[in-house]
Amino acid sequence: MNTNQEFSPVQKQYLQGFFTGVSQRGFFVGQTANGQFTNDPGAAEGSNLAEATVFGTPIDELSKEEKIKYDQHGLDIWDTMLDNAAKDKFPEGGDVFRYKFHGLFYVTPAQDSLMLRCRIPGCVLQAHQMVGLAEIAEDWGGNYAHVTTRGNFQIREIQAKDSVSVIVKMRELGLTAQGSGADNVRNITASPTSGFDPLEVIDVLPLAKAMHHYILNNRDLYDLPRKFNIAFDNGGAVSVCADTNDIAFYAVRVGEGHDIEPSVYFRVQLCGITGHKQFATDCGLLLKPDECVTVAAAMLRVFQENGDRTNRKKARLKYLVDKWGVEKYLEEVGKKLAFDLRYFALQSCEPRQPITRHGYIGVYPQKQAGLNYVGVTCPVGHMTPDQMKGVARLANKYGQGEIRLTAWQNFIIPHIATAELDAFKAELKELGMGCEHDHIMNGLVACTGNAGCKFAAAGTKAHSLKLGEHLKQTVELDQPINIHLTGCPNSCAQHYVGDIGLQGVKVKVDGESVEGYHIVLGGGVDDEQGIAEEVFPSVPFNDIPPLLEGVLKTYLEKRESGESFIQFTRRHSTEQLKELFSSHVVH
Image (tube, rainbow, N blue to C red; front, top):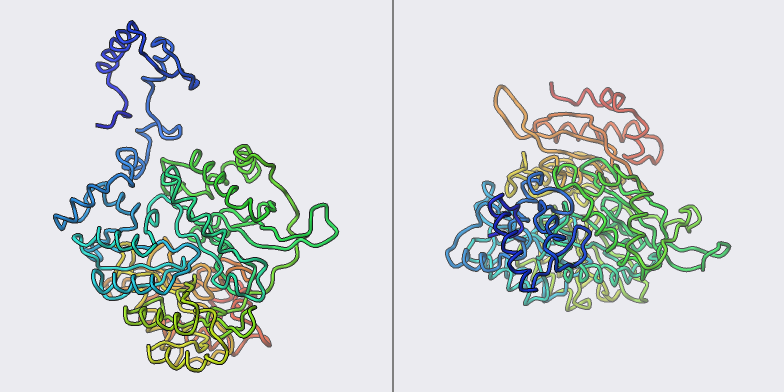
């Protein structure tokens, strides 16, 4: 029985009599309305019998998911999971949501199985961990794994009987899946070149890992109003898409001539949620490195205590800040800190180094002399167990046993000696993988799609590869572009930040419903930040390869000298783009 539920009138009458009897023996302890302890049942009557709430929201006003958490916390179902595994039984009812607290998603009807979402702090894997994940995929999964847009791994087609074995093996590998789903802080991302990027301001991995372990060891942070994303950007050459996060910490330098000590600091951006067409924006704060995790902890608590728990569509940080304003939000954050927040003008910081387009693919020198990092192509994040084991072997043989996953659904192997690059690339080719630049294929990003997600309206991964191969054969680009395919409005593949973005929808063709997409153009992140605009609504997928072929050829024909696709599309209004590309639309 949940003792926090509101008492009935009969129960209240009984309890009042009970407490009166207890008080006569002198043992009663209660609390007053303002939280003080008392031994007087009369003084405690109003608070002990008051209506139960969750951070001030009455129980009967909570959303469905909040009521599920109120009935039983997601971390408290281990015995249920053991029992279900023994009976080869998938979760039911509210437990479907609670399983997500352990990184397991019951994805029926797309697949009658569980999906495991890992938690990989800072997106860094050791070789033995990569081998262990490969074994999970082949022993208990569907014999494949996917790199996600949070520098993470997902493994699908896990049966109910194997669910606990998967979680136990994760822990034995030194990994966890705890909090990788539901209303928790998701995988903490960091620039994938941290520690060896010649352009970086500071190595942010220690901060990302500290944030990861702080979350794991504070149970209250597993009860947020909705999911929460945090990223750390080292100021280097490879993007981690930090400005798409609820909180983004950007490393910057402050030079001489200001009223603060010249040093390395962090800017703080708030409220990135590109599925809702919004990037994180600078809030004016300047933090020392050792202040970042502390401030994040305070920011999380303010969101936890004040975020909307009645409407899931309004339960992200953005909507609390929209309601309050940044100034009030930071004021409440400051109340939770034992030090003063520091405000400093963004323009007084040294400018950020430029980000290399598709810099997550190819060979690049490290700041450590004689060593290189190699970004490996991994189309739409798909890897087989054999490839995963092979990559781990190469990381041990040629590097230092480390693999860095990226937000672009591929991976980087660092610390490879220049003299061994040719041998490394030859063995990489034997795995069916490479590190060669391809302006189209290297920029493909796709969510799971309807092959594994009940929300998706289209087969994004298969469509992405088919589209990429068509464009590769028909269009010769001299600049890299990004094409993002996402299956539904949740925008897991962040279609609004692609040069070309596709959102899956059902389209009617001759009275029959087929898979199609809304097409948006002109998105970007970081120094190319912008939300793409819809140009082609409801296009059947079969019409999309020739349509986008025509779009890219028109761009090449009509662009100004050296103009990128983003610059070209943003130079024209949406109506002008529709007119410009109209001849390629199938009517």
